[in-house]
Length: 375
Image 1 (cartoon, helix red, strand yellow):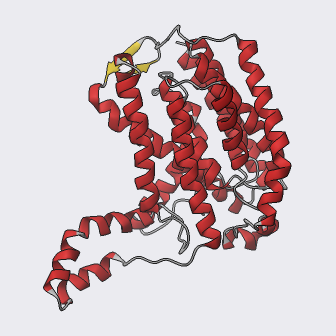
Image 2 (cartoon, one colour):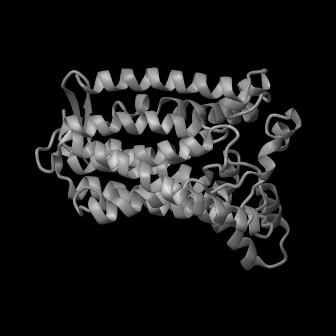
Image 3 (spheres, rainbow, N blue to C red):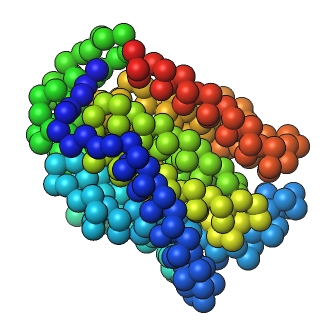
């Protein structure tokens, strides 16, 4: 098991930061609520769900409530837990991802409609365009066009906001920053993937693409799971609580404090996000916290058990992948609607029943992951 003795902290001191995160978030909540309503930061929910009636009230619920968590964690960390060795990069990655989410949230409300050429259209232009220079240009950029079109399969069909391929590029930058930090700054011990029962593999430089993929996939997984009142907040609360104690046990004091601060801020956010929600997390919170989750777990050497710490987030993301693959290969859908929480809603589960059952399943998986991490 990867451990470090430098920077250990007393558990009572760490829990004090959880309380500080809760208190500061509660103080900021009225100002954020006023700001969101004043600028009418409201995004229409999916038409299919509004027709059910269960999501009709959300047409007047503002998004970008995740700012409450991001701002709280950033402020407390900067003033009371700033460490170039252990908190500088995680906070930086969180802010990069949150900024991407904020841009997407704002453009989805205020932005103008955007469009991109379909792959079939580009292929026709290669054949029939009157200028040979443009035909060469379309041929040269065909891989990029293909990437853009394929990425659309895994994103919501929207004409506003940041396109999926643009999100992936910026998330790749955040993942690369994380990989650079872990690979070059934390030392050779972080080049290993540590498994339970004292087994490890030296991944060498291959740890870099692993880290980039995990950051990108986890950020999107949390973003995908943020679709019901209290769902993402409750599961993040469970996960970051486990990471707090895991960081403390492994001797990463600064990261334990960072995770505890996040727990406090998420607890306050979830208080306001329980149905009927005062505000929703939005991409600014889900992308930022998803990236922070991945970075903090990998920084304490829990790559192998991360799947269990983020279990329901990954299941939600995989349900989207399965749905898309089934649609384009088998010509039919596996689920009534993806991600998975909407599948159960369309089967007749109430929003409250779906959320609480997801919480329980996620909690059981996190407990199992915690147990594995201790071995």
